Image (cartoon, rainbow, N blue to C red; front, side, top):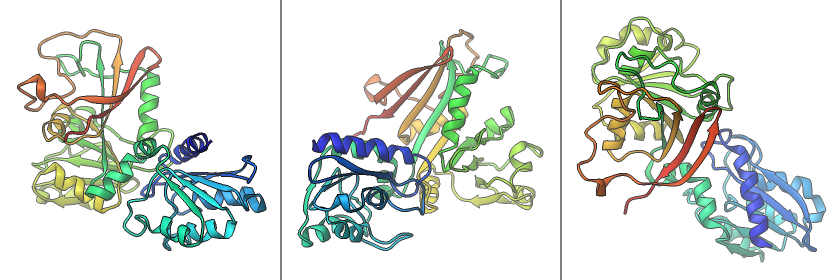
Length: 357
């Protein structure tokens, strides 16, 4: 019964994907003393009521003497909302089942301790692995100060992202492109390199709009960028950030609304700056050189690959990931938690990088 209700709480939590960050996704289920579910809730968006409060609002007095099942430890501090531990105690539940503790420094076991001090039985660790997988981006940012990095590309069946002449629109079909727009709509930032700006003149927005508006980020060591492009002309409407080692050359971009950060070109330093800004999910859309740099640096958490049923061929046709690469297969990055589904004629593969010891 505990596992069944926690599974439901996790499913509810996932509904907040893209809307609650930088907070974690949280779901809650309230069961009455006789075991019947009398309330459900989830954290719907950043700044709104937390999952437990929403579940208790539905349960009302039927929660008294029952059990709260929650995917993450109830908070015990004042943030944008009051502490959830206060609501849990006031509800009259006699038992709380928690999937995992909250590593946020202002909680970190404190919520469980307060509930136990109030005489409530607390069980921790039911479906803990699933809870950690669900909130992996949040957990990474708390532990490392860096956001979760999604690497995305579209390619032909023979692993090409363009022809030898550079023609690339469109390798993926309309269904795959719709999924990419969904991804963009729940990201905090979308990263591209100078080459992609020059070759594709992208807009890097979600169409239709999602729950978040991603900051468009360009990484250009030299600072050399096209004088006219969509990213520049829309910078006053959509946040646009450029990391470079040569800010002086980008004064006109700054005048047009872009934020310029001059710093050594270190991917880790860039990600730490994004984490400092509260960013949880970052999508790297290319090009091949930038994706290769991330792979060479061992920086990347999740892959989104769209494979079209076409063959391009040609020694000069580029592959999705360049960089130095590896010398021995034993050092190849392995992927786990792989999910595969059809997107029209294309195949969409979503997977996470296996953690290295």
